[in-house]
Length: 157
Image (tube, rainbow, N blue to C red; front, side):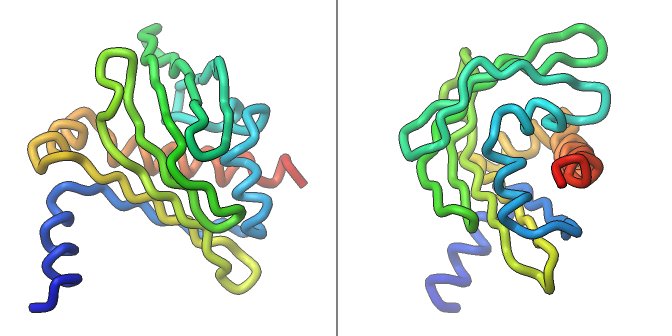
């Protein structure tokens, strides 16, 4: 087994990968993901709303926001952008006020025959941490978030 395959095998148990193809050009999908006025309209699972306190989309920039759950619970989030390649890729470290570095996310925006194939790869420090967020509903929450983005994109045209 070569080194690359071994690394992929080692990370598989520590990551959540969500993919969706959007019927929109990738520049539009990238803008929806990086412009706070748009992000606030779709970010989070069904029933959630988002208040963005700051969103500085550049390497080293910070995105601080609160996700408001349908039950009234607030979830403070803090993201530090590590890499921005417009309109191809975002890499960031996702945390909260309590835990500044919980996991690393890579979002890719690929041309797909006039559409955009978005892949969101969340890599956790351990398999146990990954399992913990899966039990918390992270997989379904990620799918619902991308579903909300899909419903929002036509409103941007």
